[in-house]
Length: 284
Ligand code: FAD
Ligand code: FES
Ligand code: MG
Image 1 (spheres, rainbow, N blue to C red):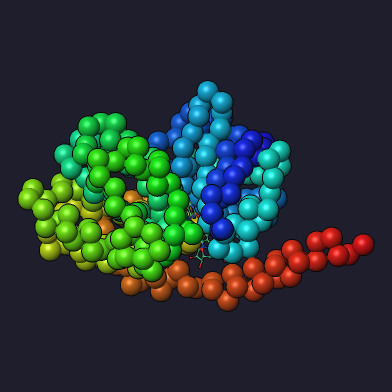
Image 2: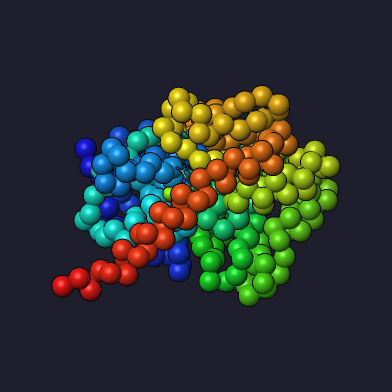
């Protein structure tokens, strides 16, 4: 069964949003879960994307993705009415949602997309939600209005000061941890290095910190080992044991090393794809 792109928008220079037909996934999905898609057929690359939202009545799921390489660029070049060959899911363990009290939600860049359904669900069960969103610069800002609608407090930071507060997310995170009372729980999603430093920020305050890991994935069923990480000194598979883990237990240095394993192939594939893109319309 193929999956039609029902609606598609560009949210920023390299960020895209789409509603995709996937009725069974739309009904079953829970916050924190993801899908794995392959664009053309069973042999094209499989990439994981978080289910950013869903409308079970319309049978659609929402995806938000950043164009970083070949497959996310191919997806960005698809139009409303086009179909994605395979969408598998919902995958992964749902986020554990309960009324913790005060939660601080930290999103870095495109990490805001997977964070939104989690923050929304935390708010719905009565948590006080403090959100920090960090971006490199203003042109990469996404989902500010959506987070403002569900947050008791929203802090936006940019690395270059072009919007909001000029700071890394760890600065306001530390200030929030220093408050009395301190937050009861933190949820952090973003680039691996950012999650590592957020965990180092919350650790001395003993604020339990959930992170959502974005390792390389292939099958998504716990069989291939591509997504293996070390948590609390033990091997875990992000696709079936995660994607969320206790950030204070994650070996981020090992994870970052494993994520560069295919850098050469990824760069070559994207370079070749861009050469092809540039020839569109020139061949006649
Ligand atoms: P490439 O040039 O092939 O790779 C760029 C970088 O993306 C790599 O260096 C590597 O770090 C990562 N990557 C490459 N291949 C894979 C793969 N098969 N699986 C995972 N990571 C890979 N991105 C979003 O923009 N939005 C999301 O909602 C989102 N949710 C994710 C949820 C999970 C559970 C995981 C594990 C990742 C998620 N990602 C998300 C990351 C997304 O999967 C990668 O950006 C994408 O696979 C890159 O593919 P590419 O071919 O365009 O880039
Ligand atoms: Fe293969 Fe997780 S993606 S084991
Ligand atoms: Mg790729």
